[in-house]
Each structure stands twice: as structure tokens, then as C-alpha cells.
Image (tube, rainbow, N blue to C red; front, side, top):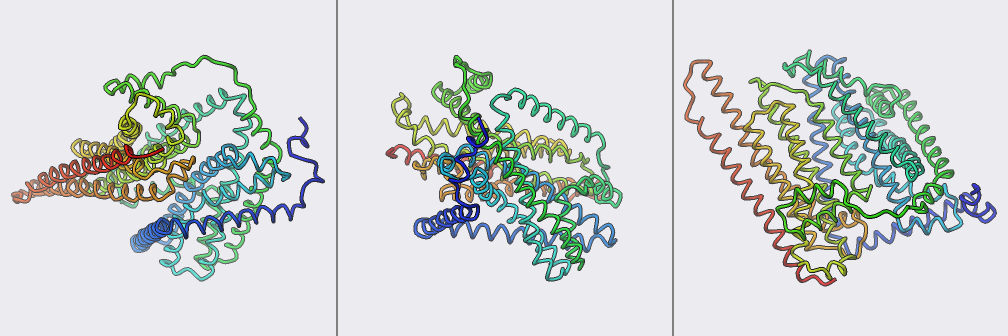
Length: 592
């Protein structure tokens, strides 16, 4: 098929480039204006709640970053060492966000370019393929970068205020960040187009390549574990060795290094060098966008046709190994629940947008935990190690709240379009909710418990604290699943077909807020008693070495550890039972 046929009508039927761009911008303006009117009239409380939570998150991050930069400034007197530490912080932060932006932009563009109902209409109108792609690409940049701006702006503002940066530092960090996000977004867009273009006919080749990449990455990280850091943490030699391990973020070809260097030069009154780095980032951003448009102009329609126009040979349906394993593992459950578990598992793994996000988040955490160097429980560092372990537990819990809000909460709403079929089956409505709850717990408890165990192993945590962490992880998985399933049944959105839009609604926002509060309370109930228990152990050891008798306070920390565990178990039962009871009652009365 010729390029003219694939790209659309002859060029004479097109509008001019400027008129075409104006038409798309008018369309976007009307869509945004309509959404704002709907929010003002129907979702005012939800909008104010989201704004309030975002402001609180921004202020909390600003306070943490400001306190951290003050600590670095007062704790590291050597200017060269301080400069290396700040560069390491900036480099790791922006390098990690750059990788996440590549994946985020690719996933969002796959959803909007190949799965959106709107795209079928846009490809039939007399518009250039590049313009259609650019329209969706700009939307993907906004959707994938707002989190980057929310996380990056408090750090940059805090650093400028702590170091006394000049006025043009504050004026330049926003153009720096906006230009920076276009570079990984362009890489993600090009990768998405190329993968979809080659995927239909080379699925096995792609899977083999991905498997080889995973095996190679695991081998590299296992090899890196052999050169562990010394146990004398927080010493100058340990700090220098830690900084040397972060030197890979100083590679000159990384856009994150351009951003880091430009902002640091601006903060030190080097405005001329900062302007050069800004020009470098903007030039590469424009080049990346143009390269992505050029790629889309040549392969996007081919990729779309290959994805939806390929002929699939008739195959006899068969049960794959993961379905058989699910049936065996869930053998203690009723057969109806087991069959619906298999059905939800198939729907989940057939949607690349969902399982790719799930794998990316957990893969990043696995890489993080594998790079935690193993420290022994030496007395001076017992509090640090315990704090890091519970911070890791909090991170996994917050990831779980995102998972339940994004994937579990919308499941009841998505069943609305299929409920005519489920209603014909000899299945009670309560069985459907129990199956959603079992799916949520089963899909979250294994990876979360495994990540926490890996974190504790790398940190060398004591067995009693490991058991406490595992119990906390189980309580988090069960409680968050109960909250998501209960609220999903109580506040369903049966008209929406997009899980992300359902999760972004009022019910999803409420679910995320309640889940975050539940995580904070559960972690505090177990973290504080554990900290006091380890402090008492340290004090007991110090008293024994000094030949002194240990005071009567020694018996209190184990008591509070047991009380905190018992209270967290009681809270977990309440947080699971109450939302499920509310959801069951509302779901029985729901009319489809």
C-alpha cells in the first residue's frame, strides 16, 4: 500500500498546516472548557479535595527537602564534598524520574493512540497523521509530567531558598523542567510506535528480547551485591564510597545531567552557563518531538492497521499454566469464586496498560531493595536501620494503595456493562464481591510480602522485627483490599469504561485518602513500639557492658510492642469488615 493511501487523502484536501493546528487547538480549548464547567457544577467538592491534598503534599515535600538541604549544608563543611552530595541527590532524582517518564509516556500513548475510541474518528477525518499524533502526544506529556512537576518543584524551590539562589534561578527552573519532560516523552512515544509496529508479527521475538533483558539486569544487580558497602555507615569513607556509586548519573549524555548542571550553575550566579544548558535542553526537546512526529507520520497508520487488521488463526481455547496454578492455589475457595478469579486474571493480563504499570512499579522497588547494602545491627546504627526498614514498609504500603485505587476500585464499575451476563448465572451478588476481595488480596500479598522480606534481608533486620513487618504487610493488603472493594461497590460509576477515569473520580479519590490514612496509622502502631523495643535492647546491652543494673523500664517496650500489634490487628479487622459490609448492602440494592 502506498504512503499516500496510508497517510490519508491527497494533500490538496488538507487544510494548511496553520489552520489545521488552529482547529485542533480550538477542539482542545472546547474540551477543557466543558470539563471545567462540569467540574464546577457537578464535582466541586472532589476538585477542592484534590487541590487541598495536592497542596498538602507539595508543602510536606517542600519541608522535607528544605530540612534535608539544611542538613547537608550544616553537616558537610567541605565545599567540594557538599557539591558532590548535592549533585548526587539531583542526579539520582532526575535520572529516576526520567526513566519513569519514558515508561509513563509510552503507556499513556499506547492507550490514547491505539485503545481510545476517539482515535478511530480522528484517523478518518482529513487531517495529517502527524497532527493527530501530535495532538495525543501533547496530552500524554501533560498527563505523564504533572507528577514530575509536583515532585520536582518543591525540591528545586527548597534548594534555592536554602542556598540563597538569585532571582533568575526561580525564573529558569520551570522552563528547564518543561523542556526536560519532552525528551523522555519523545523516547517513550517512539518506543511505543516501534513496538506496536513490530509486535503483531514478532511477538515471540519481542518476548525473548524482554526476557533476555530482565535476566541480564538481574545478573548485573546480583553481581553488584558482591561489592557491598562497609558496615561503618555515616563515616567519611562510607560517604565517599556511596557517592562514587552514584557517579553513573554524571554521564554527560544524560538529559538529567544537563538539567542538574544548568540549575546548579544558576544557583551559583553562573547565568551564562545556565542559559547554555537551557538552550541545550530546549533544542533536544524540539528535536525529540519532531523526530517522534516524523516517526508517527511514517509508521503510525501501518502500526494501527497491523494491530487491528491482522488475521488470527482459529485456535482451540485452552487453559494456560497460570490459570491452572490459580485454580490449584485457590482450592480452598468455592468453585464459583475460583472461576471468577481466573476470569479477572485473564482480563488483567490481556490489558497491557494495566499489567505494564503494575510490573514497572514493582520492578523499580525490587531494584531499589536489591541496591540496599546489607548493614549489621551494630549498636550505633540500630535506629537508622529500623527507620529505613519502616520507611520501606510505608513505601510498599503507599504503592499498594495506588494499586488498589487504580486496579481494584474500578473492578465493580467495569462489571456494569457485563452484569446482564453475570445476572443470568446462578451466582449470588455477594459471591461477586467476595471474589473481588480474594483477587485483590491474592494479587497483592505475595509481591508485597516478598518485597518487604527482601528489604529486611538486605538490611539485616532481626527475626522478631521481620515477623512484625510481615504481619503489618498482611494487614495492609487485607485492609486496603477491603476498603477498595467496599467503596467500589458503594460508589460505582457504571457509565464510564476507562479504569483510570473511574479511579480519578470522587470515589477513587476518597479511596486513596482513606487508604493513606489507614497506612499511616498501621505503620505508626507497629513502628513506634518496635523502635522503643530496639532502643531498650540497646540500653540493656549498654548497661550490661557498664556493669549497671537495668531499670524497671526494660519490661515496658515488649509490652507496647504486643499492644501495638494487637491494636493494629483490631484496626485491620475493622478497616476490612466495615467497608465490605457497607459495600455488600449497597451492591444488593443496586439496579443495573
